[in-house]
Amino acid sequence: MTITTTGPDLAAVKAKQQKTWSSGDFAKVASTIVLSSERLADSAQVRAGSDVLDVACGSGNATIAAARNASNAVGVDYVPQLIEVARSRAALEGLTVDFRVGDAEDLPADDDSFDTVLSVFGAMFAPHHHRTAAEMSRVTRAGGTVALASWTPDGFIGEMFAVISGHVPPPAGVASPLLWGTEDHVADLFGDDASDISSTQQIQPFRYRTAEAFVDFFRTWYGPTLAAFNALDEAGQSVLYTDLVDLANRWDIHQDGRGICIPGSYLESVITLR
Image (cartoon, rainbow, N blue to C red; front, side, top):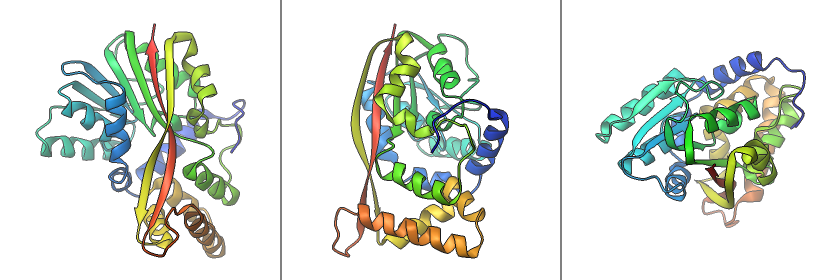
């Protein structure tokens, strides 16, 4: 995936992304990666009574994790359908959460509004990285925390994106979202505003009965994978399917035919602002 940032129409890219994330049903995918949100809320030391924002919240995993810690939690996402799912989930748990439709690059919040800002595999997909980081810093109070979970370029999800990009190239000139999964890029985005940045590698496991079941699940419910298959003819879809099955089998840590477990590596970054 390209890492250059000049030239593309980012507004058009964002509109296409929004349509992509509205397809499938990301809530089903998000239900399989709850662990990373719970872990990030803990690493960020979300406190009872604090004001917390979850950026690009999807169906609300991290927002709800923060709300369970008795914080005043707000979740923002630009896909209205996901916001509705998030509201329903919070209501089922009896949690009071403020979910808003909004853009990570133009957050619907005042300056210095939050003690903690979280994003789990969300903000990393906004096309304008520096603008997104600046918005997260803007709404965080001095001495507050920005905490991120971002897929790494050399992990399974990074390789999956590379396989898909080999069949359906990403928009030319748009910075790879996987850069957020590198310490250097996080330092570039937040270093001027930070007094401390601490990053650790974490694993989000993906467990399925077979590699084919994994690909079928992501092809059906994960917007970017669904969009990639829809962009190809029947022959192209068949090749992409085979390549993704092979990838999943190669990353399976069991290798015994009794269900697969794929280690999805991501970078967890906890940033303390000045």
